[in-house]
Length: 152
Length: 67
Image (cartoon, rainbow over all chains, first blue to last red; front, side, top):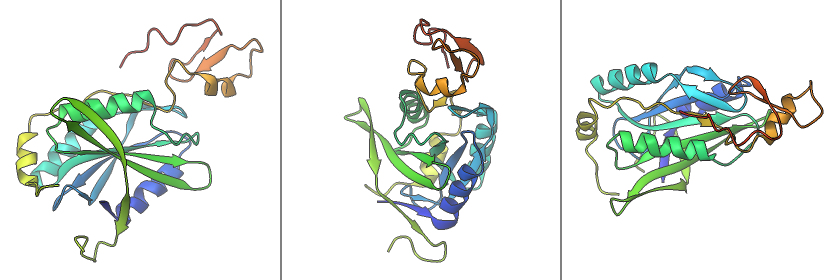
């Protein structure tokens, strides 16, 4: 099961709920790829109610900074603000593009759906099957407190 | 999942650039949500938030849409 640090999850939810436009974060890990411990919001070069185009230069800058600190980029999450709870075809295409670009055993692709009252978070794993097809599957996740041992 | 060396993954991705992409809540061929923005026409013309322009009902599925 995917684990995500409680304050990271709270930060993402709060940010998604604060805007009527789509937003996105990159996600990082340090101890284990199944444990999301870091997130940074990536500003949009363009965004609206229906779309979000991340600033690739800023994402690059943060990912390289993370690398120098031993933090591994391993995921991406963006919001939908029209209560659409599924990934769109463009989302899926972008998830595959991210996974193809980086050499990762798994890429975590998240979706935060803000319906005007609360923010619901979904996570998907992006992996490669038989070194051929890229597979995107929903995954269960749980938050954990930064002080507790997430390995438990 | 087998134990993965995070430092090794970081090293392998040193020269990788974050790819261009668009996260779009709706594929542009399915513009029914765009109609919510329509307060100027009553013939089904929709406003595309991405292009920032009006699209007639006969407009094909966003032929110019590119990453």
